[in-house]
Image (cartoon, rainbow, N blue to C red; front, side, top):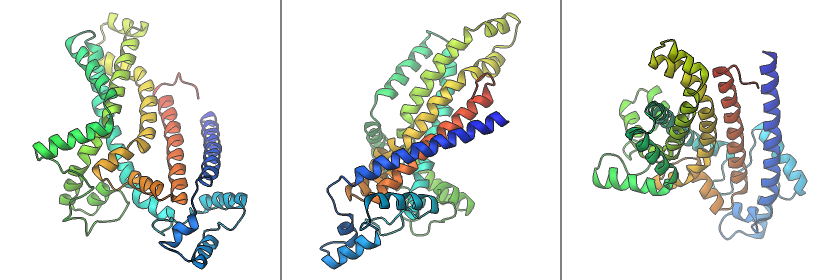
Length: 338
């Protein structure tokens, strides 16, 4: 237990150092961009006095290193600055836009696990057969297809031709005026408020963007699971289990998959973290009101506080997901040392 505690504390320390370095680089790069945040904050056609007042309120009249120290202090105390575009606290904006993105990424990750792992296991059970060849072709195709092209194709097929699923948005217009706000996660809030029609409507809007975002992870997980299973099935302990007459299903599920899933979890963790930024195109195409829309709008407006906050959130999520994956691998396979 002490080793686990020490490992977790060390990883948290590394995470803090990584975030500190990322914020340092991003902060100083943001001040290289030829723009005046105070003028952007003051609005259209501001007077000199308005710009000066905005510069003082935003702390831009301080030396650069003081601004950075104040920024770090704000990260710890919850004061992440004021958005130049929305004029709202950045942390409040993130609490609004990040949960829908996280919900979308979680849905895509679950699809990757539910589809990719069984497909990879089945392909490994029938190597070089028709199903195995089909899985390899489809997984390679999913890895090669651009997510934005697939998103447009899904819209054309399921909305334009089949009329089965909505084109874009998080929810239909008839529900958009009275949405519950409990946790910030749309599907969960609909369930907690007991509004089943709203839940089903939000689920319909989630399907297409989740499929578009899950395409690459599904192909990757299927290929990784198949390769790891084939490698594990050739191990001596699997051959011994077969020689002793163990049921094939038990060998696959209890022994082979448990040993092969570790590497797949590592890749899936990286894909999950990557999807937090990889879904920006998806959110733009499906007009999904999440972190991607917020980040793109902030970049176009040169909203420095919002951009810095998005970078910090993504970096933190990336490192935390990797920590969780390492701990899960250790729990699944005790041979792995931390």
